Image (cartoon, rainbow, N blue to C red; front, side):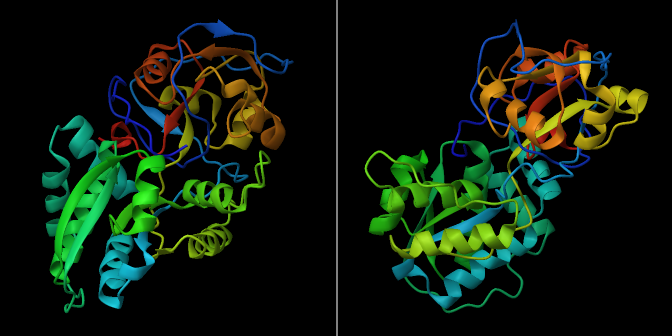
Length: 337
């Protein structure tokens, strides 16, 4: 689902990260709808609070959407790949959350946030020099990707290239430009890009090929690189940072019901009082409510149709309108403190 417009940060108070999971995407209207499956048992009523805890996806429902540099194969010189890999080595999900906080909450520009991160993390130290020529880094149309593009600019400049960052738009626009060499580099998301390219190169007529992404990062990257070879796109090292969907509860809810994982949520809170919140398509999506039922046997008593990780969902959590809701794992509002 990646290459979306970043949603506004709207939760009240700070949010504490405690693990990550998958969901689905797409904004919707507020309201309460019947869930796709019934629930038996008392469940766990919503508990209002000022902090959110992201429940651990202990059974690996979500695929591996790690940040990874995508490179036009003709431009994939050793110095260029090494510089981009240095960015991957510098990132994990907590650092990505704080980068997004700097832009989306603290209102710094992606360029300023990237430069401060580069300085604090010695990003350019040890980058091999000798790169020559001009490089255009494409960035998708949301702030996280633009900040990552600025990090790529800093690393590639240190390697000796003349670099500019150009906002392109969504994947349907920038991927063909990357193939053609109109841009040379894009920050990508491993699982989403793997399935995008697989669909492009292996689709037969109207039949969509099975996804090649996986909860196993190595398997996802292997499939991604194989699909990329067919269209002239190479990939650098995946980072530890992930931008995928997650399910959150308030800290007060987690403490009251002693839940920290989705397995614990399913075991202790399946039942009529539990309200799941997310985008309107969530009940049917294999990475949202349908997946929670299949993988965890979690059955909420009600489903509240809200937005995809946006201010409606976070407000519903903190106000005590829903028990558990969909958020994004790299949301700047997840920064602790």
